[in-house]
Length: 258
Image (cartoon, rainbow, N blue to C red):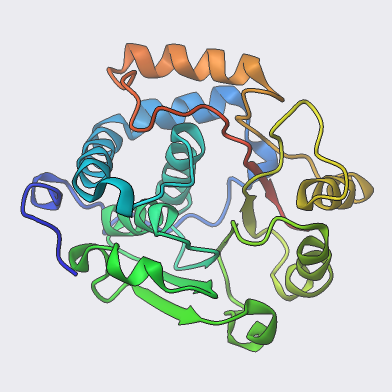
């Protein structure tokens, strides 16, 4: 569907489609300082996207249940801008809040395609037509039955689906081996506290990362309050201090597959 004219301000935006695609800067180099640098680098474009998302959320009201909190949504956008992926895979769309952030980054890059998978299709009634355009493919159904449909040449993997341990074991055993080494990856709902919840997706994932000595970055206020404090200061100085969403969990982790 197409959203009212006020939401999409892409005509005001400078699309950097001519910039070279990045293949370096893996997420194991991600630090609070490098994330703050990305906020500064893409502040102008991020401000426009934040305004679009805020207006869209107000317009849709209770019919849009936004999942990602501000920091994890913004960091996802910034990483996609910086890495310029050709192929992004999103597992779990729900109402489409993360989908819109990802598509906004691909639009602003002037390149890239998103492949989304979910067992429900609420996302189809929320994502604006001007965002989806020819840069989005949605597949309805259980992703466990559609492993062959996930592009092997994925440049960024985003997971926000079933948060149980069983699903986490499935993707670390079946999906991760399908990905190329060096694939930037983010997983939602990991750190709602200082530690992961027992028998949860987060507990399985963090153990898997530790066993392989894979570092991760998280903006979780519970796990890494110093990260939030640092980035909040950066955002305030850039004029990005007003929240898009009034929430502050940010339990996502970012890392690079090996």
